[in-house]
Image (cartoon, each protein chain N blue to C red):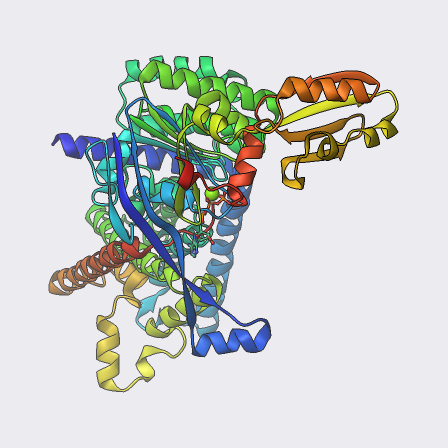
Amino acid sequence: MIEVKNLKKEFQKTIKDPGLSGAIKSLVHKKTETVKAVDGLTMHVDEGEILGFIGPNGAGKSTAIKMLTGILTPTSGTLEINGQIPYKNRKEYVKEIGVVFGQRTQLWWDLPLVETYSVLKEIYCIEEKKFRERMEFLNEVLDLQEFIKSPVRTLSLGQRMRADIAASMLHSPKVLFLDEPTIGLDVVVKDNIRKAISKINKNDKTTIILTTHDLNDIETLCERIVMIDKGKMVYDGSLYHMKETYGKMREVIIALNNPDEIKNIKPDKKFGLNADDYEIEKKANSVSMKFNSAKVEIPDMLNYILASVNVKDITVKDADIEEIIKKIYKSEVNPGEAV
Amino acid sequence: MKQFKSIKRTYGAFVNAGIQDFIAYKASFFGFFIGEIFMCFVMYFIWKAVYASTGRTDFMGFSMIDMMVYVFLTHISGFLIQTDATFSIASEIKDGSIIMRMIKPVNVDLSILFFEFGSKIMIITCVFVPVMVGLEIYRYITLGYVAFKLVRLILFMISISISYLLSFYLNLIFGYLAFYLLNIWGFGVLKEELIKFFSGAVIPIAFFPGVVRKVFSFLPFASLTYTPVMIYMEKYNGMKLIFNLSLQIVWLLVFIGLSRGLWKWAEKRLAVQGG
Ligand SMILES: Nc1ncnc2c1ncn2[C@@H]1O[C@H](COP(=O)(O)OP(=O)(O)OP(=O)(O)O)[C@@H](O)[C@H]1O
Ligand SMILES: [Mg+2]
């Protein structure tokens, strides 16, 4: 469905010395610097797959999406989506795709929301009957009814995002690109949007590429993730595999009757753990301890804790994907070697 | 044929949205409308006073009635050819929102153009038609016979449409240059000044030496409103009419070609800002 080979995008950035003299100097002599936003990306996505496309700020995710959607022309490399080359014939190509850029809107700002949908209906030449069916479906999954007659500028962020997602899917695209579709939304709306994305994927077999900084999105939606950093791929595989491989650090949350007792827990003494292998952190009402479960079995650690302090409550958290990703971002682990 | 139908359907939707967008700003529109009517009356009384004070019926070859038609028509034509294309495209390039146009199966220039058509349709029905009816009634009362000619109105509409498209594509070209001069504000001022200069608004064209004057009169800037108005007033006839209309068409084609070429070139080099 999507085939990307050695994709690169470089930007020419003008650099300006600070201050007025710098501004004047830059007028006369422009100094430029090359930024490699996407640096040799190769990937393959199957039809009907939901791919989580993640990476730290500035990793090159949005730039990659812009190339995949035909907005930007790659510096080098090849890409083919749905049998077409995005930047070659943009107008034809975009008929088959849907795009949401979470930070922007494709809705007509001053018009009632329905008007945007009727313009889109004409742009994509959707038949009346098909259009009505589609609207019904989108209305059901995204709950647009209550604000469909309001001018877009009066919508809340969550409403606008739902409306934008509906707009991107009105023409039943084969591929959907969602660049941060849950940015700035509350938990309930996020949850609704995730459900909607999942339903659309099942219903239409839509291939979806999703970028996000909310790893809950990834956990609920994506079987597979591609992680990039500084324009280069650092991980490509299932979420499960990632947890198995890097999710050695487990977290125990302990609520104590007497918080000071935490001093009694000394995993370094008891189990001979290095400073890297554990971390104790006091929180408002509890203590969090992270430790390397490859070095100490979880039951052993729990027994040790229960024996050393007076515990009011204790919980063991699942391998935390956020922790893993934080580590990969900070290059503490190198997934390239492990994969 | 089928293709034509789908094009009509797509851009018809933009016209529709443009009309609604215009109506969404009813309040500012009524202020604008009243202001225009007021301006027309001010101009009427000024020229009436001018003619009364000179005590002549003829002023530089224009009768009082001619002058009225000229002034009103020029004024309205200014509105009809006015366009926000430079600002629209430049600000969209600058803040990156142009990508929202690019992810749709439409031409960037046509989507802006047809959206603006919507507001033009509103201006024609709400300002142009009433003012023209008023003007013709005035002409009829003063002259005692019907001076209005449908053919002239049609020719005027053709000519003013070309003028509008000319001005649109010219503005679009300036807007595209925002790819390179990302801060459009200073650039917008420069554009205004250049057009003023070439249309003789800074220094009257008559003051330039003969050759320069000849060149200027072939440039389209001075004639954007002048040509359609002269056509309506029956000052351009026969070969002169055909020549001036053809000149407009040639320039239009040049500008469309230029703007399309510029866009094609820029599209490949586009570095969308933000996001
Ligand atoms: N138009 C541009 N001109 C110059 N540099 C750019 C441009 N667009 C992006 N960049 C640079 O390319 C790199 C990748 O940017 P991109 O927007 O793709 O990151 P991202 O992964 O989407 O980040 P975020 O998670 O913050 O949205 C950044 O270093 C950015 O500064
Ligand atoms: Mg981004």
